Length: 190
Ligand SMILES: Nc1ncnc2c1ncn2[C@@H]1O[C@H](COP(=O)(O)OP(=O)(O)OP(=O)(O)O)[C@@H](O)[C@H]1O
Ligand SMILES: O=C(O)c1ccc[n+]([C@@H]2O[C@H](COP(=O)([O-])O)[C@@H](O)[C@H]2O)c1
Image 1 (cartoon, helix red, strand yellow):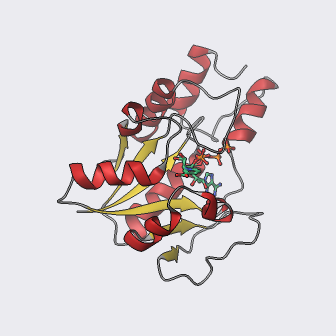
Image 2 (cartoon, rainbow, N blue to C red):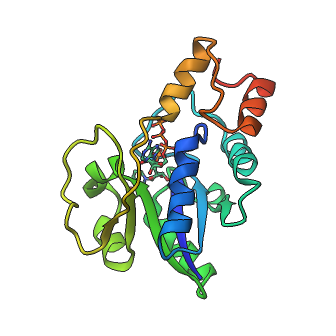
């Protein structure tokens, strides 16, 4: 099977992530998209980062009704911070029957040259990119390993959702009802 791996902090998962994953799973040659919840992005220091189990639970809740979307906790047992090339190597070993492609938002291309072994990622994997508004310039407009998927721009971020919660503002429609209820129950981000 050809599978898209959508790596992220998902702190929390929002409708932007879901639109990206569903677009990739239905408008490209991918048959499934797996959300890989990263315990710790090597570049992000964030006091409001929830425990990976809670972020994983929210992803599970958000994608429960979509059989093409799956969630993985593979990075929970790997060294931290979470380096994508290491996870890709583990997944390729574990699932030799699948072909994996990376999915990312365009903002991740700006710093991509600072990722661990980024040349290796480009050599061995295709990257499917979802455009993101206000992205700084990058070098991947015309790279043979990078494919831009044409789709509506989504000006929404987890940062914005966390900020609204801190201000006691409603987040309806920014996340699924199931995720909203879980955040409310657990009193996250307040
Ligand atoms: N609105 C968006 N448009 C395009 N890509 C996005 C969007 N939101 C998230 N992504 C992509 O989803 C992946 C996971 O992102 P992440 O969990 O960091 O979400 P985020 O909304 O960017 O979070 P934060 O605001 O906390 O930085 C990354 O590849 C990121 O580029
Ligand atoms: O491998 C790296 O060097 C590397 C550097 C920066 C980010 N990443 C991964 O990219 C993903 C996107 O992170 P985030 O926090 O923007 O959702 C997440 O899985 C990080 O672990 C990976």
